Amino acid sequence: MIKNLMIPNDGSKYSQKAIDFGIELASKIGANVIAVYIIDENTAYSYDSLEDEGNEILHNITKKASEHGVEVAEHLITGDPLRDMRLIAIKTNADGIVVNIRWKDEAEKGIFGIVADRIIKTFEIPVIIIKE
Image 1 (cartoon, helix red, strand yellow):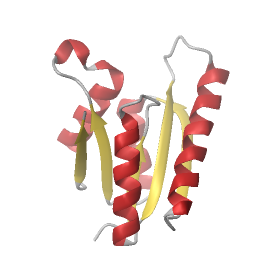
Image 2: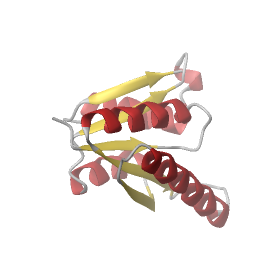
Image 3: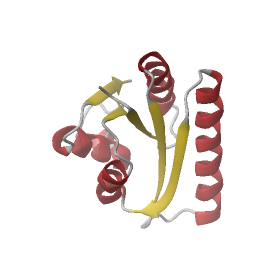
């Protein structure tokens, strides 16, 4: 049984499907949501703008989830998405994860595509894939 459903988000338009699905699923099965936004420690973008974006995304997830009676724990960190996504899952006792994938080929994969690929291959919890 899934009690803590992790929903990582990269701020892309594609990830909204994963958020919507994850919240709906959590509502139906009585799970909590672990909303995650990781600012890549190697980014060339402004940290402040990414932090603002992350906080806004997490706030929107929490707001939407509360409309469905779902509790949310928000996690915004700066780190390495490839490494830290797994650590967050372990530390929060996530027992399921919803990820979006959006690439058609290796050239389109991008950093979140690589993270989703790693999650699919290495996580020992159920992974629900929402494909664009």
